[in-house]
Image 1: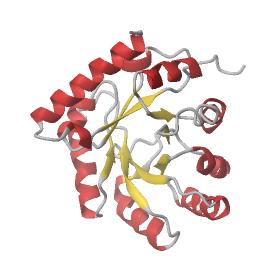
Image 2: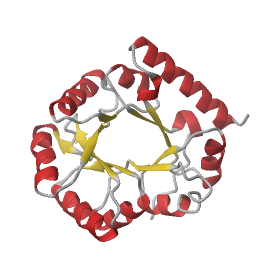
Image 3: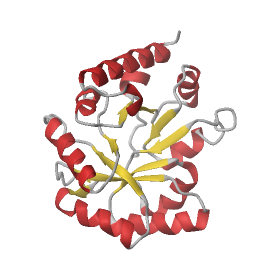
Length: 227
């Protein structure tokens, strides 16, 4: 068994335990293995261990890794979880099964146009900036309800759920609980919340997707910034 396989087994066990504590069916929580910056070989190790759902931050990296893997792994599903530039919307629609970072009107319009052109409809999640942090992507809390309605009514987008990343160092519980309440208010069943450090808390608050990277693949080696 590889390190990645062992890590996946341990995380799946912890997800099952968290679900038991919350009186939830473990099948109601999907593990998204965040493979950003890790090579395709690491993804292949995870696939061999039965993991089929992956997350990437950047469209370009997703394009480099995943299209070649799909023919041999037809159940593979790719989530784009990073901030998405409007000019990358069409590429995102082509490569992703789920886009979790819809967060502004211009992106909604670009995704709607791309879906029409490509004839392909990935699931869409609205990212909410639950901490209203100026440096972070996501629609502000106060604008989230109106934005959801605009996505549906003005752009004709089928929104599947919500995503958030609570502020670093803050108690994530109130952020997760607030997002779950917003989802219930708008009839949304998918909640992407919780990462390596807090996914068990997120499960207790109703997460249906948990995004785990470091605990599966190890620490990331980011490329040096351009001079």
